[in-house]
Image (cartoon, rainbow, N blue to C red; front, side, top):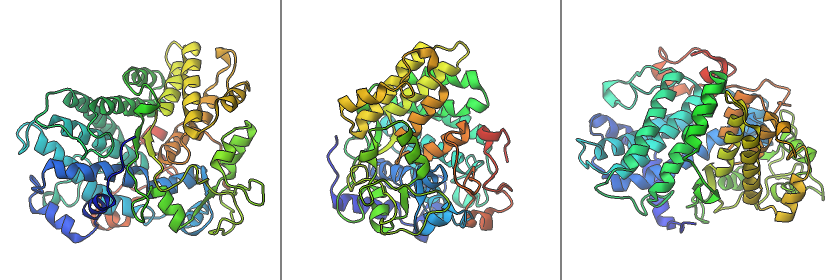
Amino acid sequence: MKKFISNISLLLILLTVFSCSDDIMDEIDTDPNNPTDVPIQMLMPGVTVGTPYWVTGTTLAWFSSVFVEQTAGAHGQMRDADRRANINSQLSENSWAFYIYPSLLPDLKIIIEKGSEGGTEEGKWAHVGIAKILMAYTMLVSTDTWGRIPYTEALLGNENRKPAYDTQESIYNAMFDMLDEAIDDLQKESFAYPGTEDLIFEGDLDRWIKTAYSLKARYCNRLSKRDATGSAADALAAAANGFESLEDDFSFVNWADDPGHENTWYQEENERKHHAISATFYDILESMNDPRIPLFCTMINDQYVPAPNGTALQDQAGQVYSRISNQVIYATAPLPIMTYAELKFIEAECHLRKASPDPDAALAAYEDGLNAALEQAGVSQGDINTFKNQEQVLPPDAADLTLEMIYAQKYIALWPYGSVEAYAEWRRTGYPEMNNPFETPRRFPYPQNEISGNGENVPDVTPYNGVWWDDGTED
């Protein structure tokens, strides 16, 4: 595990990268072709913190967790969201309007342009490859979250204040190309190589290459409703070069244990306490006698008390409902972005869904994913064996492995930090069945600042319309 960066360094990075002041926009708009003279080496820490922080670990994750019923809202904004009281243009404005579009994506673009051919730091292909992976991941999460979003006309500053919205299909195709470019770039001889300024892998390019292939497998698999067999074949081809073990996980570990620099979910639990264990999630665990229950959940008066989605009582103090255990959420807990376990579950599904299904390969991949998820959760080997001896968990005959078994274990493995992905997967697979009495949104609403400033281009949709890969429409 990488050493933690110093608290002071992380504070400076957060203050620099995540400022939402007008100064950032003014600086970007000064020259859209060369927005800043900050060298690549100084931008790299910010983007490698900013991506896990704002794309994976804060607002989008917290709301997604409630929508997909991995947690229940027991206080404040999350309780309102659980009751569908605040599904409006303010829901995710922070993520879009203050961080992703005005800060993170422009900085990634600068790294790519400066380090590529003709740039002021031409030949820094390692940095360029990393930036392209982070750009692709950020754009794919963003389009999964909102649907159509600006891309080809975005990030131009004064040149275009009202960018058009690209179709989700075109963004997916462009990001697949970007991941392929990243893989090529990372294998070129580079003018310079990142070290400690890369706060995710410390310049380990082999791990970045595996990450690019693994992300490509994830997002190829996402297209199963549009092309069941083709997406399976594409995902398997990418997965063949992806993560090979738990040690390869695409995960951010450089949190510190002083205020403001901790794991983002820890900050939420420590300061807001909006989330309780969801009855939907707990019931899935209980139905399988899952040994992760005591590792995942706190107890109330010596018993587990999950909160019902949509009807939970106010419980900021955690005295009514079980909360996420401090074995899972703590100040320096790793924040996984994509894991080896998830990749193996993708492989298992695709082996069943491809043109010529291979149940034996599916079962082998499924068991690898199950072992990895259980080990990562801290389950003892004895308890792993007992759990797997249940036919509903690990069927002895490969022919009895079902897609729902794979979806169930993947849903659990994505809890709690992979909630953005779990929410996308529910929309794709229908698993799990939602128990909230209110209708579940199928996308996030567009932010108010975008409606106010670029309303003629914002798609006329509601949060209950599906995105393209979900319902086939580009609305």
